[in-house]
Amino acid sequence: MGKKEGKRAAQVSTVPIPKMRKYTILIAAVIVAVVVVYLCLCAYVSASSAVLPRTSTQGIALGGLTQEEALQKLDESAAEMFAGREITFAVDLGDGEAHTLTVSGDSISLNIEEAAEEAAQTGREGSFLTRGASLLKALFVGNQLKPDVTFSDDSQIEDLFNNLTQELALGVVETSYERVGDDLVIHKGSAGQGFQIEEIKAQILDAFRADSVDNPAFTVYPTVIDPQPCTLEEIYDVVYTEMTDPTLDPTTKEVVPAVAGVSFDVAAAQPLYDATPDGEDCIIALTFTYSTVTTEQYTGGLYKDVLAETKSTCSGSSSRLANIALAASFVDGTILLPGETFSYTALCGPYDTSKGYQKAGAYVNGKTVDTTAGGICQLSSTLYWATLVANLETVERKAHVYNVGYLPVVGTDATVYGSSPDFKFKNSTDYPIKISCYKDDSRVLHVTIYGTDTTGIHGEPYNKVTATVTPKTVYEADASVPVGTTKADPERTAYTGMTVEVYLKLIDKNGTVVETKYLHTDTFKSRDRVILYNPADAAKYGTDTSTSTTTTATASPSPSPSASAAATASPSATPATTTPTATPATDTDTPTATPTPVPSATQAVETADVSDSSTTATEAQTGTDTTDTTTAIEVE
Image 1 (cartoon, rainbow, N blue to C red):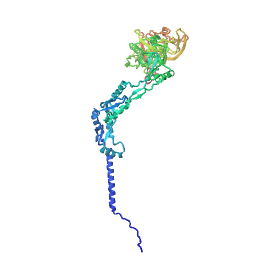
Image 2 (image 1 turned 180 degrees about the horizontal axis):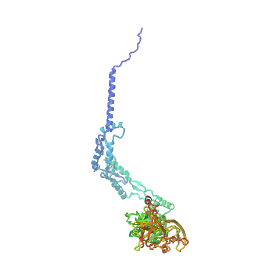
Image 3 (image 1 turned 135 degrees about the vertical axis):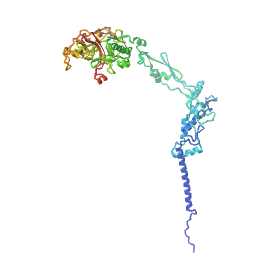
Image 4 (image 1 turned 90 degrees about the vertical axis):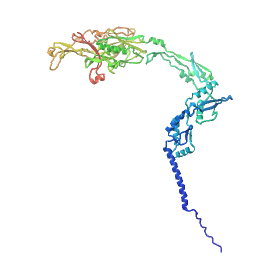
């Protein structure tokens, strides 16, 4: 009987289980230690600001330095960094000869700020976990940095190749052109051989940065270079000149000569240009246009005609006369180009002592008092009158409160005060105009407008009086007046009120009225004449002293004005003299205005410039009639 086979017993490991675990733990510990150490290295690189060890720039060791320290060290070494070094390269001209050029390192420089920053950031570019590896690489291999270098002076390189190109007659010829007589001569360019200098400069810099020791470091070859493209349209844009007439420079007021227009037909010239071989000349006929007025004619025609000439007689104190003369000096010589606007305030303001003005009579609250710049409105008014004669466009004008009395036509005055109202007009002619104004020794204010009379038309203003208000004589008690006498109040003299419609007749050189234009309607206030007396004489003048009530009497108008109102106007187209009268100048079919009464022995006569109390900020705040000018003259 055979033996019965039994199951084979399983093999049992001969290594004790505790020993296996020991190896596993040891390996894990090593891995953990390595990871910890690596993380520490990463943390060190991240936390430290020092350049990684064994890092150098162009052979200068910067390891362990901060960026600021690295910058300082590079700065100290910069002068010697490329000193004495040279790069030699070959130039192959295809002639079988060896041509070499050498560039000195003295013309090479390093941007030390960028180099210091690059050294400080090397190894820190990536994420946190890559920085430990960067440190290990720096420790075992090192970082040899080659930052970009530049030319501190690249003219040496450009001169080398430019000279070489010229010597070998290799250079490209660019297209050029010039005007010869009445023709445009285009010298078409031609291709040539040259060098790509920018590429060669980059190769030189790379060789210095790499510390190349090869000789030659590299070889360069000339290339075919075509001339820069130049189209007929591009040439036309340069050659074309717009024709301009002679004119005045708006700033200097000097004559700018006429410019001839220059042009040519691009479409007609294109086939000829295309057929012209490179290096040959293409001749194109130019077209010229000229101004109908030569510079000489224009210069000779400036200010040759008197467009208007007006005069007014000045009265009043020496301060008022000085103010008028001062304002005239500001306006005299003013030149306006066609379309330019004249502003009286821009030239004569501000109306205060800083401008040199003195105090002279003016109206405030209906009385005549001293005000700085009193009298200046006589010039603005006389000038407005002149612009009407010259038929210039009025831009801004405001009438006085009272009729000024020194102009021949009531309603041709213009008040100014502060910044507003202003007197403005535009040069509406086709030529420049010049203003001349002055006050002569006879107290006559002259205003003349010169220009170029192309129409032969001048203006003659006139008015139609539609209403008048006769002033009254008012008696008022005043303790300063001696008993038994009276005194005319010099601050409140009589003015006749009136409303006038102002028109302008345009008359040609033959004396024919070609047009009549309505200008504006003005209303001038009246002012009562005031007689002062002592309160003890109240019964004599019928005054109730308990109520301060005054009695009034009507003043009688006078048929003639004072001598100070004389004024003349004389336009150039039809020279004439207008002598003013007390009755405002009107058309033949219109009623005349009632003039200001002639003063008695105790009355005062005055000429005044007054601005309306509703037109200025000062007046709005104070509630006063702010005036511009006046002078009271006692007539005994």
